[in-house]
Image 1 (tube, rainbow, N blue to C red):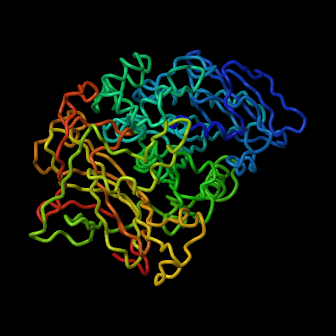
Image 2 (cartoon, one colour):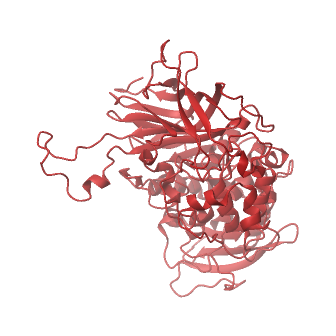
Image 3 (cartoon, rainbow, N blue to C red):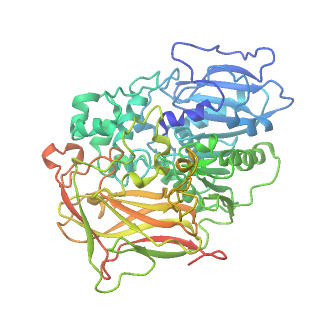
Length: 636
């Protein structure tokens, strides 16, 4: 749900979160001479009597009624008005808004109890806690904030994206525009805490401490070493974490280990399933490389799209990690994108969206989706999403190649490796720094994958250099036939764009010729293995998410691995690569590879090595499904 990465949503106002001990002025607005905004802090009452800490900032140069833009967060509100307009809100501020920030219940000075579990729980017909609190807040604001025009918009990233999206379940009549950005939708299925039931160990552990260790602070766990890969490995089975470190104090951790399957507990928190139509103009925003909430916006958009006669449910995605569209986003890994895509989004998409629905200025957006197509590095506008495409199989072959030609009869049946839980594949290059306050965490989904492509427990399949561009737009997936000598297993699939190698010398015929200047080679994308899509499936859940079952030993089983929506061009001269592995540590907890009723209760003895086979024969083919879009000069 964003952690410190989502503090971006707070820092948009150009001020730090309020410290617990420093109470800003309450009640009457105040503004120094020359200030851009008046600043007012109030406690807004909810229907159950709880009061929520709320900051209201009104432009001092306002000449008429203005709409309200609301952000609701668990991370702390600004403790003063900004001295200058930050770039993240410059386009919005130019149109003129009353900016309002609110701490959700139980956080900082807001009253009530904060609970990650209860916050997402849906009451049939009534929405979630944030649905109610959002409604009550908007009702109070339009009745009590001077100079407002009766129109309210709500937006935010990550957790603040969720508090925005939750208003869609019961929108207040004054709510005229919503932009949920990287909102979580189903924590077990594919957002912050899990990937199709596989526990996101390091994230769940560290985020739980961040938000629940102290009501009045964002707390970082005190690791005793920098390489958290070593720390998590030494910590042992999940059953040891409460005994050694948390001692039952972190509610979200307790919930995760108590409910390893997709039971009523988790299904009751899949709040997005209560969206039955497009009720309010909504701008859904996702990052193709979002390391925290890559799934939720797509699901929220799809639910609203089931009934959208007025075309008010929009989808936007770009070359972004979590919340990157709120800051400079001119590069993806080492690749320059040719523009600041964050600024493009804020100026050309977000600001016009709110201006039309809250100010009545400009034109109604005439698109269903806006995507930044990486590879060509071009913004694309679509009347519908996904666009027309041809689902095409890219086959894995036993010789390590990839091709659009299916395996022929007589080709070798499989490739294999040994997966050892005592030596799991790291999810990013070591040392793996703590998730917070940042480090390499924000960018790991776009990191060069060469750090693992020669491990004996990682299978690599690579295509020949492409003779022409190849464009994909829509849902990508993988289908593997695979077996294990254990009774449970994980398989991780990565789709990778491999950049061409650049020669290190200027004249190939002269090995002693002068090479590039210092730093030039390191800055270029020479051979860079850019992940386009990566996902994990856990074997115990292949038949049912609700009722796990063991895998049959050494028997080929079909593994379907969704790889989400993409919009990308593999350029001519590049290669396509697929990597397959069985661990992704510590972002995903280790699979014992022995079936046990509950992995959180597994003992050290349950963790065993297993022989893994990925089948590549004519009768048991493994492949990636690419949604190919044919454009002039490209291959199909």
